[in-house]
Image (cartoon, rainbow, N blue to C red; front, side, top):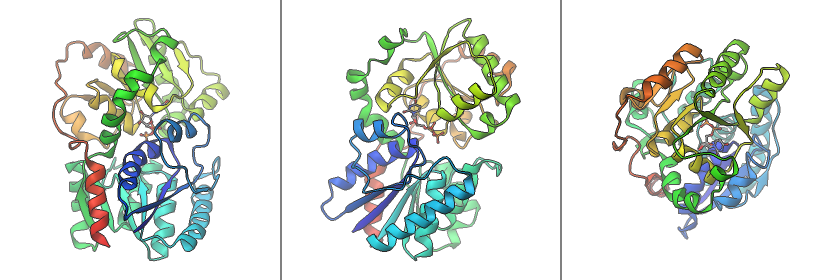
Length: 359
Ligand code: UDP
């Protein structure tokens, strides 16, 4: 069985690492990787392939730094050429980026089977490019691997029970990756020493969602909150290149520790030793839970509603007062992070079996 995997953005490399490892163990499976080039800086791409031992992409499309339509269109065109040549049995896509949608659309129009890992998530905010990508990718996928029960319910509510596609509750493949790499992170990461960070004495924050970066008032308000918080406790931000450029261009003043984006081992170390996490990332909200950390989410909605329901995550949006209040209230929270909200860390195995069954 031949699988073509389409990846292009940082979280997709992390998700794909877990399944690629499982595919390599199966003699009946061949995986060919296409890297669209959506993320191209070495600290946003190469570092993950190297340290997570992800097989090298056979195709590098080098498509990036374009508007959404141009990027998705060009990716489709190039992916189609590869698919016509490789003729895979299944095309595998991850998450919710333009690379996800381009891969799924190119495959579907060639009547190839599409498998979507991280299906069924919804923020119910159609202004998010990710939400559009998810809804469309889900609708044209044959196999939909859901990380949570909520994701399965979302698909049922959209009528997926009546479609030809198969919905599988696989659990979250990011948990597979986190469990597999956490020991390596412990032994190999030196990031705390490098930035003189003390265990449980800093807040780890990330900001990169378009709704925050492309809205000056929102970005300013989040940065003001982090600046103020940094007076009380150290705030460390591995800054996404897009956010860095916007902060630079709009001359917003920052007064906290900004570092370059880090590899996955360093990231696990930063998460697991932080007091708490502040983020607008999707993946990081869950990783906070995996490593027993409370998360303040700098968004108005989240796809990971089970975290909010369980009290592990507070949505503050970009409101400075709410962000600072959530930080102050955190110290009185007593949380145990022991519910299997995201499965048991064997999502890749479940996905592999389902892929074998459809042939
Ligand atoms: N991440 C990383 N280094 C960083 C920032 C994030 O390895 O400097 C990881 C993070 O731990 C998570 C993934 O990248 O596994 C999340 O990616 P991102 O926040 O870019 O995307 P999202 O999850 O919001 O789609």
